[in-house]
Image (cartoon, rainbow, N blue to C red; front, side, top):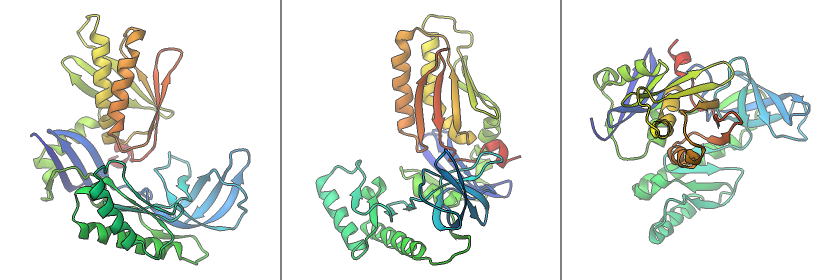
Length: 340
């Protein structure tokens, strides 16, 4: 099926959302057991990690780890927000820079000022949205960012989003408790899909739509390592304890240009393959053989592919052995873990 579809359903008793683009599963959100990104805690500092500039915190959901802090002693009360999913056996990653994020608006308590997405370029529209921002944040010292989705939204919806995020931010920031507590939960998959998948799409909410629209078949395929790249070309995406290994193959094509074609196809398919499988951390690409002079073409394709991806990914570059390295935020739970 051509076009974009957002499907809201449940799988294995868990709330889930799927994004299908031209009949291919492009993104997948499944509710997990660990605290989801966006959750905000009132936490109590526990013990610093000497030499690493971090400190462990006590939260209702277990130990959390806050990086890049100085001058914080044991027993202090902090408000922190979950930034991603912890690796097995490790503490929950958190930040002290809170964000209150919705479809159109982001309230930033630690960053005052009113800002618009750079993607909104029409001057008249920017003026109109900035007026909404001033009205919605009048008398408030917190910052506000209006997201690109605000450009095509009804002004009333934008104003409601600003008001809702401001109210939530003021409520949380004004908290004066002293014991570890959850102050607000991160968004569940259905809300997260509404918040972040903003491009035009058909919305399907019928019970069982995952089965009737091929999502379950796509999820079954994603639990395997093989990702077809067209023709005989393929790549294998295999998580290990230390990293995610990606092996690119040209198949039966032994021509001189086959390596570059397979590697370009890998670059274009990789973001969706990682999103759907819920994989992050260190990623190593074992690419098909190609001349060094073609590396720039591959790098350009990789940058273009990840530019449209909403998960923070650092394109680290080439290793001495000719592999390509990436570092990716753990913004999803591994599919194998959620459905195990």
